[in-house]
Image 1 (cartoon, rainbow, N blue to C red):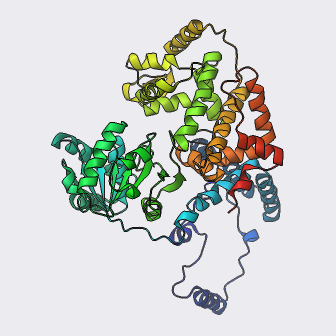
Image 2 (image 1 turned 180 degrees about the horizontal axis):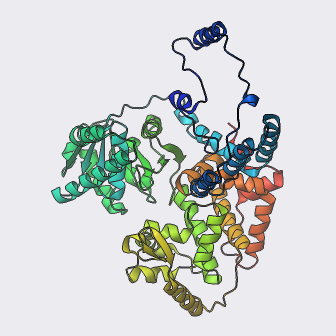
Image 3 (image 1 turned 30 degrees about the vertical axis):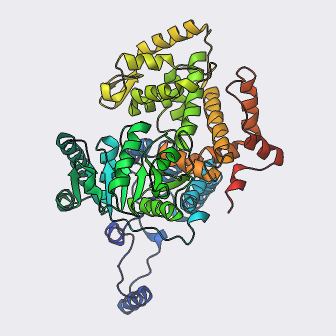
Length: 544
């Protein structure tokens, strides 16, 4: 209990012996009645210090440490809590309390405490937007989902688990049946985890989920989310159909990861009803929802999107329109920094290891395998026409794509997979060596510290631009996005908070140093330079 910090129910506390009785009715009256009952019984005084200490259990200590190594990786306070409990088994109460106070003071002084406190409050502040103050959301009870692939089925599952009626549209009966099967599997997993009863699952599948192959089934929808192929022509075709069949006031949302939502909105007769709802896969599990507000999105549509996010149990972040919005735009920049390090001599596996040691859930190349190397390839193809000749193109990743090594889904990408566990593929290093030789690069070594500094400097620098341009309204929006959707270590507070704790002058100095050898990539963001010159922090910009 202590090492997890997870609250427990009163019944569990009674069962564990932490409390003697559960009151009913008015709590103060129940407490007085119980105290009177004890006095009438002549119950003896029962000081904690007089209770027998439990015997230390070395096996239990080892077991909880092994569990925390997986569930609380990188965190210092859970292990300190375990040590405090073990101390309580070996010392008198007064000495144990003194030791516990000493450990607590140590934890308060750690940067992790500052990062976690920051993360706690910004997750509660992120949904507070001046543009939606006093704005009444539109009612949403019935939603439509276009596309029943992994993303569409996940969005449908998220809505069904929260009591919404869902109509899922697919191109034919076979695809609709497959999507329904995927949703059923998702719900079965929720039953297995104890998050859903079997009866409730059956009711969802029979009563609140329907599938169809024609758009006319969406006439009664309050909100429709398209999750089709990431192609502007395809998206516009979908929205033209939605414009035709959906009732006035129905919100039309796109789940695009990169495409221009202003262009989509301008293609139909009701641009004010259009908004971006960028879910993260798997959509019924991941907490982040980027709410992408287009130029002509109505305020009550934005308010409805945030209300829907709350209904779905998501953390919503407002984003503006640009290529990649907040998260993917920043990701493309720090991923480019990683590719530049690989071309210069760093191993992708060393980069992944350094960044997981820093606290990321996964390194960038393991993430690429998880997403699918076809996603990265198609993104590079989409951007090829506007690419600067000095950009580093990961031709080794293109080669993996052409070899059919798409990551986890094919069993081989940067890593070789047996299940979800990957081991480095030595042939990847051969492809990288060839790319360096073709480019005339003499490789050099990178230690873990330099890997982290370059990766984080690229992330913070691009994030500063995102804030300066208003794509993210505040630095805290960036922090929430990276923590909730991109595996950034929560105890570091997000990239902007991390930069504040490092010192913005230190981050700027790193960028200027990196620019000596690579001026094309390393341009300090004007906002970062401005804050350093004024002696301010990113957190200063979070004030209302």
